[in-house]
Image 1 (tube, rainbow, N blue to C red):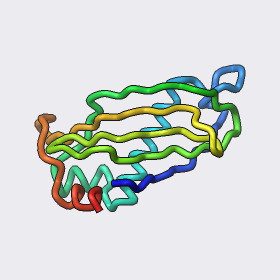
Image 2: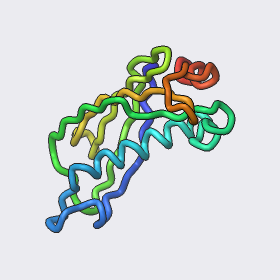
Image 3: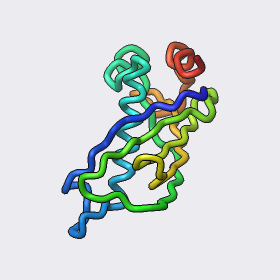
Length: 133
């Protein structure tokens, strides 16, 4: 579980305030995109998770720290690293980087739930196997 996935994100005007600085909530969108692309890299899209495994992920909690601002036209790397896999929960560490500088860091607890019931279920075995490789 030491593998780190990185997704590139370019900062557009829509991501910033009038001063060209990234609005704090935009970082959450960047992290969500990276998690989606990380799952896609593992072979799991949201559509296939719903159709094949009758499940989705919900964010149970998220803790974020901001260190430096991103600005208009920056090219960032948004990382996803698995910290722990429980029965129905996956704990992820995410960072937003500009070159070697950490702009923001978050710990994300995602819970696997039934697509119809929205109640916790076990992480599907095929996904667990890919994550634990």
